[in-house]
Figure: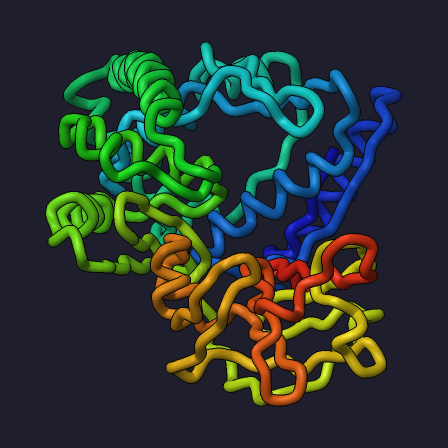
Length: 392
């Protein structure tokens, strides 16, 4: 497999070299081109790496093993780079010898060998290879470490590459232990969904385990782990803030919120434009306010069909002061009080669709149906569901 990044003026020549080598050795060759400038996120080197592995993963089948030629000097350079980024054990574990990759595995069988050993082998066996001219670009962190930092370190400590390999293995063991502990703590702290933590369970842990659990939980929910300073801010704002406060910590496209005894992780709330009243035919899903309203015909539950004209309702959203008498209850209540009793987080309340028939609030989607609008017995009804975050 050869991935052409199209970054160098020599990129097409490198691809031809790979094809020629494979032809000479009767090896099947697949090439794939990527555009590193399209949709770029972060630094060019990291983004190119992400696209490269994504391209390789598309070719993987069940049980396949992808082999890459990373060597011990690569590993040492990665450890140094991660140190300068302030990484923890997982980052300092650097390059694993083998890991899961798509439906198969990714392995680096040459990590036991240094760059000089591989070059000596290549010369002895008269192998032809090409050099990436960007390897001498000192503007790239890895090249600066490779060409300036490591030679200076190895002058004083000749076994530096081996020592840094040992550091990476020790950190890999530490990272595995921390992951196991975080998984155990998450079992105790898991809330009503994967995106919710019990604040009481979080408070019961030491500060170090709180940090460890928060990192693991954030990653478990497919969000990027923030810097240590943001993790510490979370602990201060979530654990030590007043019980009636509703803190919100944001980084990138993620936010952490607290409500009562629960901690939530969610995408940063979109600034949705105000949605005015609109008519909704219950026969068709309605995409609105970052979610989707759906309805299905039922018997003896939901909104009584007889109360509707042409199976339509008007959809509105909270403005304040709305009241409803839920079916089966004897009193009328403000929605604010009902939402509090239902432990609905404040940031979700204004996006809950209110369904009106004429000027009467007939139902709060997903929660209550007003007395007199509820279907009973053998009456035909409409059951309403509001799916948050559903846009298609």
